[in-house]
Length: 263
Image 1 (cartoon, one colour):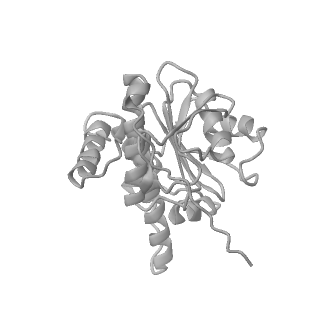
Image 2: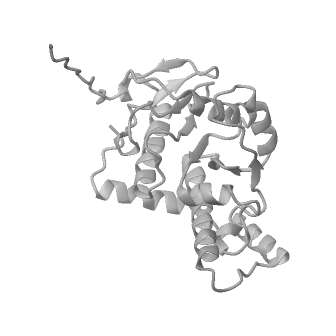
């Protein structure tokens, strides 16, 4: 019997920096940084979740190649697709996951002011998504999304295009955070940094809830409605989220460690 040898194609592309606009390159670097940071925060689920960003001034969006781990993503390896999910630029040849297009494409279409969408399947996020109570106001972290959080019921793996209408409806016109029931978490932002910061708080709030309920020794103390609303509003004002400062600091950490996400 002859031995069959399979040769894997290299997924290390050359730089796209000279082939795209300066605005697109900047967004590619920002999104690649988010993928690398997600790997550090253990937000990954093998290759099966997605972060997307809108290419400035166009109908296109950037998404991860279907087959790379998050700690392999670079600015040049991100795939550019159009509003119908067709691949326009893909240096890896791996294509994209259709489920990622179904979820992210509808959000970018329904919310033109949104430039980044982050979706995760973390253990804590999925655990809270499976709890009928949803995310409870039991921590300061939960207040970051308290006044904006919405929910979408599970309909199966996101492969059917008709689900997009219901997902966009459930998200609503202003929310930047959603729990996908029995599935995971979704955050949106005008920038990559904003979407990432919202996901940080949302996922931490889910972890805290699972820990608090799992302790099983005391009743969980809820933050009163008026105080929860106050905390949410405080996050929106001066001294609250401080998104740009946090995002800049996170990227400095990647640079200190020599992570080549800008390749």
